[in-house]
Image 1 (cartoon, rainbow, N blue to C red):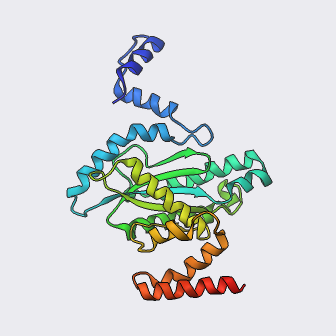
Image 2: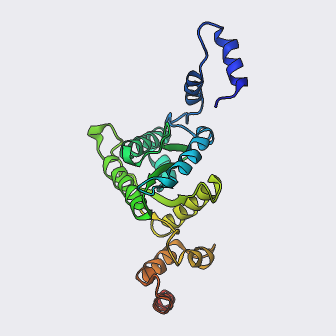
Image 3: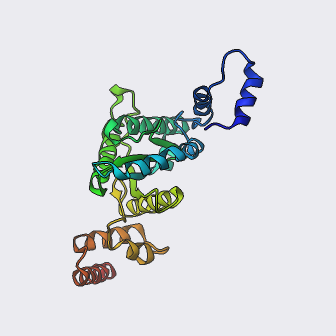
Length: 260
């Protein structure tokens, strides 16, 4: 609910003509809580929407499809280079394009019972919040977003910049009964950082990756180059769940790196 203080302030500004309804005040909030570049709802709007998101998550716990809420943290790859090479105006247009494509790509079946499902937090970082039956389906939604951004961003005929824009995504389940939203978003953000370290233009979730803690503690610690981290990650990818094979391939990968 919008605060009584805001309601009183709006009445002071617009006068007493007609009722100042909660719906009207929500529309006021939507205008205020927009990113100035993309006009997408921002982090402040997300904070206001969290009550609805949490309540929805608790309601769908008994849903026949056993749906869950997933958070995808999204970051535009090499966005700083876009600004440096093409200028801030083009960089801003890329932000508009990517947010537009995300909104178009999230289907009605993915969306929560909420007014919006993706937010432009700051800079080149965005978050999409949607519902799926399981992590595999959630990753498919994220993959659809990734592919659509890469494909549509190059289409000048549709009004986009024509640049090939790619994004990295980290996907985490948000259990409204077990954790605060901030903890789930922080996990998704860490997963997104792994996606970038493993080569960008990809999706990653550590929710069911037995190597995630190892990657965080050892593989991606400061001092290991992105190229080396990517090489090791690719080497152990097929060894998930097989400890002996994982360690053998990791050792082999490190030895190859030393010999280069």
